[in-house]
Image (cartoon, rainbow, N blue to C red; front, side, top):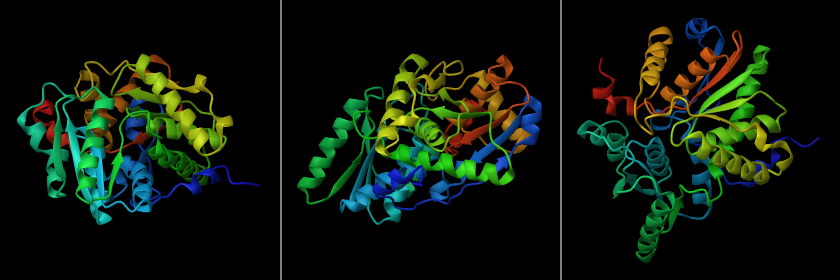
Length: 340
């Protein structure tokens, strides 16, 4: 009988992170919410303070290495976890790294621009570029392509990690595999989950988890909490990425667009901006479990989980899996905004 995820084997991959990451119970926070809560600790993936992007970069940098690249280019927000980890992965593989920082947060202060991920980018020796816009993915990718051509003219061999949806979602394969990993851990303990909750931004973690769960026969809802755009724009993005991933592994049969679940009730006032629900979620996780969440992704995702429980969308007593996708360096960049 063929392995359900055998289609992934044809894609180049380089191991960068610590896996499997822990699956930890969160009994105090779960009791406060009236559910059984488990945390998949992908903040513990190891590379340069970890995070979900390590799993994705194993495929992007695997392809870069297979192509003989010596320079990696990537774009993201000023406090992007993805560019920080791309810089770390590139350095570990002996490659140069160029990162393009986009202006997505309109009330950024001096601390936001110097601390957290930005500080780590500089320590990793990344060559940094700036893009005034933060809402035009095509323009961001086009700027990277121009830079890549310039580097190629100098004799370099650049590899671009694109942001837009008109490029294959290679990184999502990391979460197709992660779905299998976490379910093996759960089965070893003798249980499954009634629901999965994660942040939904670029959509690769969300879509990859959904496809991965369905490919191994798991049917629980995978709820994505919007962190970048509202649900009306995020739903088709997740659906498109998931359909692509299912096709990439030769399992288009496992994906049904009707199963895409996104929620934007805790998203306002927008990307990278705090609200009371996020502050409460971060405080509850820290004080009840010593579990640190970041203000942009996991704090908002936990706020969404709490909202789902309180509204009854997640039933009392449910066993719930929360994907902790990392992003912890951003806590320091938001120090002034998180102060009481």
